Length: 211
Image (cartoon, rainbow, N blue to C red; front, side, top):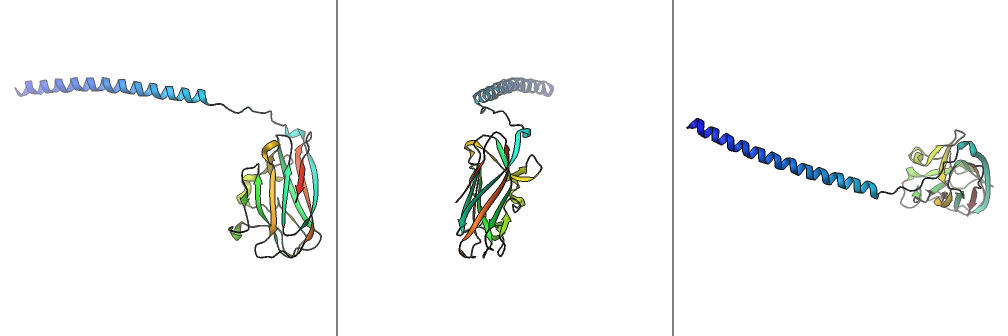
């Protein structure tokens, strides 16, 4: 009897095991089919933006831009290009007609309209300040003063120089605001000349404005 009971129990368990296995296989097929259907539907729904033809670096040239203003403690430098192709600013030098009474720092930088990065001023840490013209000097270069934590804004230009890179067209280009270091005071006004060295496509015009 024990053998018969054990045989009968084994047979029922085995039967349930087969039915359960078939059910699990069927469920797995349904789930797999659903996943495949969702994946295919998602892939079909994705539309990629049209890709423009890249501009060969052999068609790039060097331009030097100049602008002047009266610096009263605040200034904004804007560099833009009309063509939707990258341009590189490898030098952005500020000259004063008299020594700075307080260090001039970069307050914000905005590249390609991605949002202004606050570097100095109210609410910013002193360690983030980028000194462009130290107190007592008459010149300083913005590109050469860029710290390593802003390296994502920079690339090598076609000539191998470190440069701030931006897209032309409707991207917004490069916008940089300058001011005296917090707590330094205005220190009066001074004539300021800004000189930019730009590597850009030879068939376009890059513009710089200050104000």
